[in-house]
Length: 298
Image 1 (cartoon, rainbow, N blue to C red):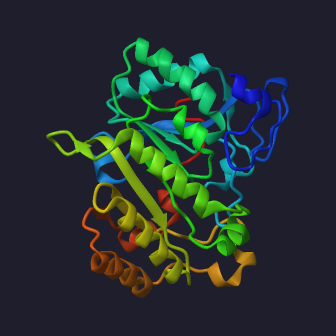
Image 2 (tube, helix red, strand yellow):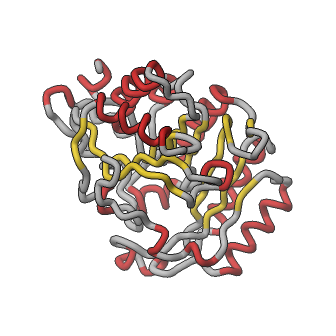
């Protein structure tokens, strides 16, 4: 846990000593805090078909998204402190329930602890793929430390322009950071691999949540994805943005995505050559798709 003596896991580089209980931007200390661990059916199909993805929701976040739909755990700290040993047990329990994978949601703040838990659970019989589900605002050394332990990377690339990254998530130098992280992720796991029944075993899915009024910014992200990876990764275009948390303070994003804008982004993706991807239907713009952070499975 030496990394926690002067924590620089993410781009914030707070350098606090979490071993002594100090906390930085994300408010995480030494203990692991979880809000939910359960089978989840609403991830991309290769992750959640059948019995579902074994999602483990970590509390606290190194982002401050004004529209965060999970703000109760990301910003308000709802969750329960657990040990590394308990986290390992949770991984094995989800495998026993038939999960396709272990899906680590917002894990950046706890990477050293996760590494130890994965090593333990793999020794005790954990065999399903491990998914690293992140906002991509982490230092490259953090991603490198996961080499050999992660099978599927699920990075979200939220913004191209720093103007919007700072305004809506207080995340300066976001795209440059996320770009480097995505490249390292692909270097580790390579091309997509599926089982005979279509369940993802290895590879990268890059997510992009479209925001109201930012079609041009979204197109820049698609340009990067295709020019860099061609069709060797999946691209997941998400229209599920729903005004939450503090979004009412920002009138330009205090509304849902229009079907016209989303269709325009899909058309653009096809026009530049993107062939491997996922899109969403309109009914995803609903609070009903947000899990209850009630400590289930913890």
